Image (tube, rainbow over all chains, first blue to last red; front, side, top):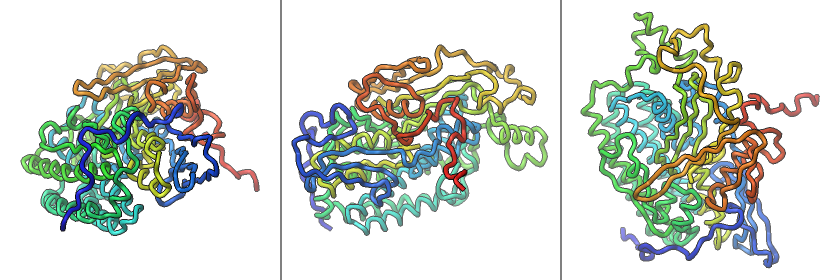
Length: 425
Length: 138
């Protein structure tokens, strides 16, 4: 199939001169007072195209958006407060539910932060498996983004194709952890269980299938005139504005800023794998789409490299051998009194974490997903604060939604890929 | 700028504060002193801490944490003119902790409802602090 090329790439060019961040409030675009016949429309919070419960108050002049303000908080569930009242051990389940689309990655940032406070060393098998599952969840997250935001612009078939492959990813999670989402497979110290037999084979099948599926997506969209008209040049954000508005991840890389924590501050074992970081210059909806599609290809590469390494580690431990923090092996509970006591202590009282304050930030599918933990030396965190990339992404709505028509609004908000659970926490 | 973290240290290191009971002294088999952990954490200079997490996006990247200590009722100057992204983070710190930011262009609640009472992430805000509506109407 012939791929129709879009406009020539803007090498080093900015999508617009100057800054578009509204003043004095960076997140609220006020209509020009000279405009007459304005219509104020309330989008959401219950609207199928807002990816959850985002509310947008929009001022329209004809079909053109001249004023916009995002209202959030409809999905605020008080995760941070709840986590202060649960033990470190029990809290592993919560972060996954904050950003429910990239669940495994939030679990990862939490266990990494606790391990940093504990100064706990993790076996290499756990590190590589964390990377493999992290990249699988990146594919999952981008598939959900692509399926839903293409659906909103009218490419309904994309939704079915993306969710077909998404199911394959979830099958892999089910195989590993027994649940399809929110697995609690990552534990403080390593993994909950050994990697099941047959996982490598299934994961390899997936790695072989996925690039072909991505080719299909691109064949559907890159040559689709309607898709191009709806996305190219729409909702542009320049690199400077993106940095000023705290954008990270694909939204930043689509605006021409080459910034990926996996390369810049390698965590896990990202400095030992070979992958590329796609960067585009336009900063528009199309480039955000391209960045994510290219990232899926790179993620597949990383997953297969992880599988190569993991297969050499058969029989190695998957969790640290520290009985004060890690649950003892199940079979020991029937024979060892000491193991039983440790198990009881960890489950009922939880383990203590030395006093301190740490921040850990990692490159989640949506950008820098960070967590600040404050410990007072007891079994429960004193303070938990998520640095939510979606929260920052929605900052950019007012800057992106200038000169767009009301129909483009949905395309722009979808392309920022904010998950409302992550925004409101 | 990446994030503004507001922390309430009310009752830090005292018994009776939520978060301390899980390791109540009498049943402590692990003996924290033997592990080098101190039972009473280092005292803090004031009730509230505001941490500004900064990141430089450049080849020589750097991360900086700037911490400001405040007592209840004290305000701090806004940083929105410097970092546009501080807008929502400051609103969140105000909403959750009740910290005022002088000169913020739009300091209103962000996550809670506009007419909400109290600041939920303060340590003296009770769990289950939400009144049950319509419970006495019948």
